Length: 388
Image 1: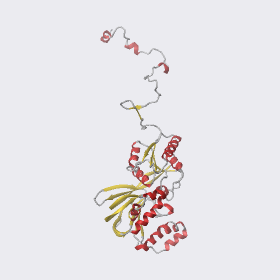
Image 2: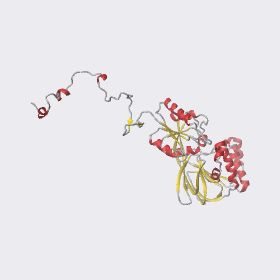
Image 3: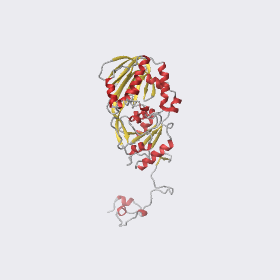
Image 4: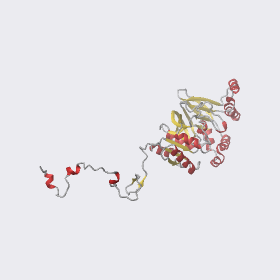
């Protein structure tokens, strides 16, 4: 019986039932017309904008992992570094890396957050200590690994982690196929004289007082020329006018102290260039900060400071006989060591603050804390982590 639709359908139109029925014809792929006629089509999918212009396809959801490189173009050979990272990423079967340059206004923390928003699996950083600090600040607690490609002058974190300083390929490979070391991150909440507050991370050490003044007085041109040795010039200028100042300080869970000091350091690592051990027992993975209070009495007191750092810590402690000598020596109070999960420091007048060798202005209060295991460091397979 014909339906109402049959009466409305033109006489020459096909019957829908018959059209939907199988016709027993097996069609090969080449029998099917393509869904586009663009003769210049490459066969690859592409993304376009509203004007039809090609746009990059998002990597989200792709099976291969992806890396990002954040680098300071003034510290590295950018072309060579990018090419090496791209080649080793391809060799490891990873997607094409993302590349971000730091600037004067962005030391690396903002671009690192951009990289993390792209769901990268590892971030490589190449630059000076300031770049490493800024990138580490953005990476803290992210759960994404950080690979340090030693560059610049100090490389303090790389030195403290005993990473190869002259083998960039080794550290780049570790980003794609290496072990992981969870390390602590220190945080300093800085309060200015006008009440303004800011919190920043440090991965090596920070301080208030003479050490920060030394960095502020270092000639930047000289630093670019001779590296960390330029700090000697800054120290000489700072010592000439150095005066002790009173601080109130309190370690977490301890009683409040008052002292006249030249400087208070809070350290996550303890090694300096030239083999100097400022804090020989510091560990990047013990969940604590090492506190160093410098309070020499007069010019002669600096002799005791230098003996403690350059002779006792950096030489005698390496040998059993030297350690026996240290155990018998009368203690002096020129340098006092403590340890805790944080320290609160307050002063009546503003004093300079430094974090990982960068100036952070003047402050009347610094509250520090440690975030245990917050930064995941990529290290080469088999890298010796004993004592770290």
